[in-house]
Length: 481
Image 1 (cartoon, one colour):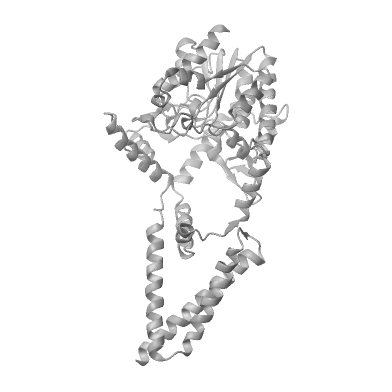
Image 2 (cartoon, rainbow, N blue to C red; image 1 turned 180 degrees about the vertical axis):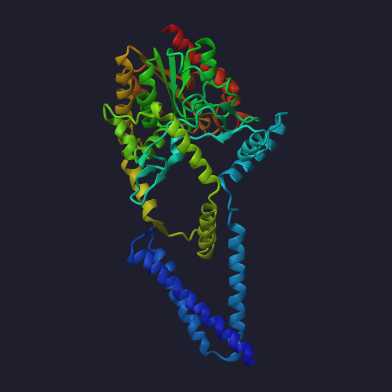
């Protein structure tokens, strides 16, 4: 009995101390430093009053009789075990990006069976490793947004440094086998051109380009064979067609691409592919980069074409550092362990999250500032207008023509029909700038079954049929010119 009572005292006293530590933790983060803020008055009760009461009850229970303390300590232990077992059950597996990609691919494999098809279930890393076992140097596709890192002050800075200075590459590693993605069954794989883009080699050396395309992942070639994306299909009609698309590019990055590359080759037509699903969102995020915002200056550029050798070395080093940096995984595990200790997932499930970090608040405020009362993103749209006008002016200087091609998202054709609400505003804005518009949504609707233009009718990039339709619409405009 004496030994059991001693253990009970330790358990109850420890529970009291833990509750006091939790109380001090909340006071420190919510009241002293202001790192987090309450989103509801209930939060003060849950985070201040409840830990204080539990601490008081635990420490006061040390005065109880032996049997009561033993029974209460057993209740505390079993309750604690049950609560953390439930938290563990609710905690999603700690997956790397490659693990997530592999899980996604396996889901696609199951879906493909319904269509009588098959899916390569390897992860992108496994594909790269298989190439290297064959003596082929392969790399994952790299693009500007994946190289931007958020700093303590909220700004975005490139992780690439050349000669001690910040540099943001707009293409990938040149002349290397590049593994892109897999949505339709097989991986999209290409050998990057002389500047790391998805083109056949030699186009840069010819000194003559008729058509250049800028855009995001749809233009980049996600996730179809390099000869089946819509830019490649345009190239079959007009051989001197250059693809300068890169995943996650928004309008600011497209302008940067025009200033760095397109104006040096002076094509007759520049195709600006705008994806309604996230291009304004990408613009909102990328404007957090002081370096990218400098592209709004008339004569700014980084001189990227002449620095490709140094860029390749920096990107290869970056890939190797990321791949063999176990501290990143360890940091993630420590963070997840801390979240479990705070019962993050259980509190989320019970709706007991009553606080937000300052970073979250800043993000919400930033988004609120970029929306007017009607819900449209007026500041973003104004910046977008300025970017588009700047691009039009640059292209017109050599007698070229800029064409805006509007790419619709999958959600527009689902049962809910929840397409982007800024569609009409964006199209009106573009037409007001005098830039001709090709609206691919109309072509998709004319097709009769728009969902058939997406991989297995699911969310994703266009399949070969969708890419073919986009190319046909673009070719009508080009031929007329």
